[in-house]
Length: 280
Image (tube, rainbow, N blue to C red; front, top):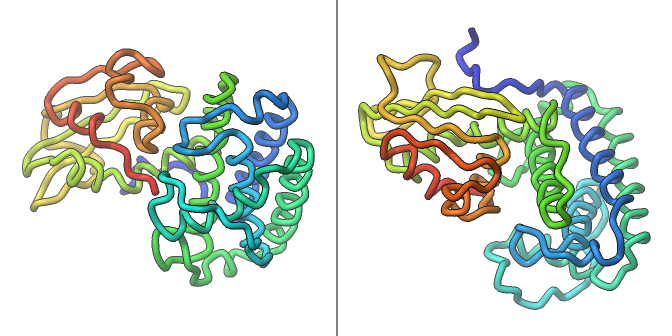
């Protein structure tokens, strides 16, 4: 057993590149199913319809490809909370009136270009220092976040148009890993775990996972085993877990059965569900 059994997805240069290839293909296939009416449906991502989701992803990959940010003025929408959000909104505003087919063509073009660049990069280049949305790290860390970000936005689109799917496999595993990298913060700070409190999180599927968390020395962290039976357990689907962590569903909705609902045992599990949202 490794010392981080809750992190399961491969993160070599090849694996991450192929995860992005899979994710972008899934998005392109999903886009091909959408009508003009679907294109303007709202999604669970605050302030964004389906069109904005694709525009955002085009913008991020265009920036990574070295393209200059457009000169569009997004105004001051209420859902923009920070400089990263402001930058995202400029790209979204630049494509607000673009036809659906034109945006989807741009998505196909930029993702093909990015895949060509990624496939030319070495393992060493993936390990090179890089800015990331969570601070200075390396390019590998940035690509882990890109897999997560694109998958979350795909799920936003799918929820908005009621076309569920692509919620298992390597991309979903990497995306759940991204949440579990922050599980100590979520359980310790957000849910207020105390020293000696323990939690078992069971994801029932489509991604199946069990993660153990222990409060110790004023913080919480994932562990390989607990000293005894957990003081609290939380059982729910990976879809409910991901949407709670990304602030895409109200905790009460999950308590009422959304995305399969949740089974609680102990106060800590309930506090986690109520305070899990942590993404930018």
